Image (tube, rainbow, N blue to C red; front, side, top):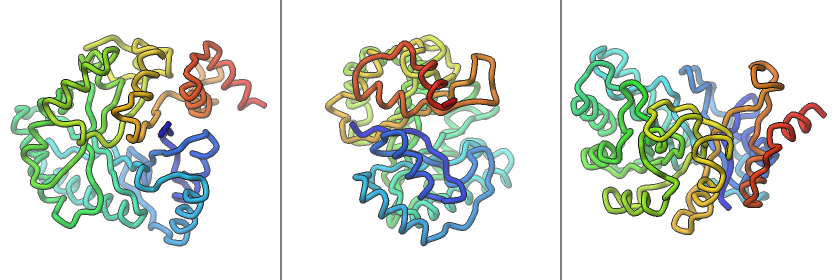
Amino acid sequence: MLIGSHVSYGKEGLVGSVKEALSYGSSTFMFYTGAPQNTIRKTIDNNLVVEALKLMEENNIDINKVICHAPYIINLANDLDSAKYNFSINFLKNELKRCEELQIKYLVLHPGSSVGLERTKALDNIAFALNQIIDKDAKVMILLETMAGKGTELCSTLEEIKYLISKVNYKIGVCLDTCHLNDAGYDIKNFDSFLEQFDELIGLDYVKCIHINDSKNGLNSHKDRHDNIGWGTIGFESIYKIVTNKRLEDIPKILETPYIGENEEDKERIYPPYKFEIAMLKEGIFNPHLKEDIRAFYKN
């Protein structure tokens, strides 16, 4: 199973990301090259990149299946403030260069929010920006993430993603997000039917990554609140069918589920759930004691 999670990228750079992924039993992973909420970025240490690549090779992690995620603050949809719009374009160009240095092939992008603009105009802004960023020599593919439709988010429908693909001069891909699809109104409990719909409208060859998340909210809620696997409205059985779907077995599956607090209200002492959720999905058996097991493991 090609599965992993979001991991950190700290003092050890990509080496630290690989080590964290291995500690969870992952066969792939996703990371940000800096904090997702800001644009502060450290220079990439090539020695750490070489060390990370060696560590991946020793542990059968394919660098071609590792995913990077662009920061949330990029918004290519709204050009009312030209300085902010151009900053987003230039910052995304820089993120692609950093991915090249790290030998990463895929960069996931939240397409953006219209924030007062008409949706087609906002979509055209995204396409225009991507055409400034991507050229025929691009070594890194941008993956548009399917969004929940919260607020004025774009790309909560497959039609909007298809529209962008048709407007961008060079090939881009898609990152499916199970929570976002559910919250946008797609019934992924019947996942094969959804894949047929996607294949007919866009083409399955565009899918290069899947974010695996349960949802705290119901179908078509447009909320975007992730939940732990089996604890939300999508449910363990449906998510298990997605991660084991033969049509997508070579696609990296990335968990972005919430950390577990010491109790439901605890926001400070929180523990990553990924080691346990990945094991649960590999075994194919829901663990109703998941949260207690996580707390016990990290407290000890």
